[in-house]
Length: 123
Image (cartoon, rainbow, N blue to C red; front, side, top):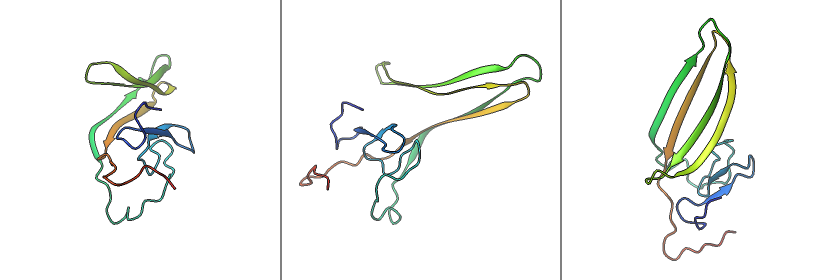
């Protein structure tokens, strides 16, 4: 969990389904894709999701040689170059003449902040 106060942009919580750390404002878990709460009017006014970064690539093992093992790691650094997150995403092996494809995307949405007069009590 983050040290950010609940209700502020960047605050996190655990998904009750998969236990991944997710944004507190998320209506759907990006890891397991379970819905976390009903959002009234979500169909009428969808939130604009930006994808400021998307990288796709693949590796293909040549037809000869020993199998390759791979490790997929994602790290996040702040503007000072300090690592603030480091996550092992997956591991595996590629046999001769096999291929694996990988995609990384960063989705950004406007942070929902509480307006004046709105309390922090949940019901």
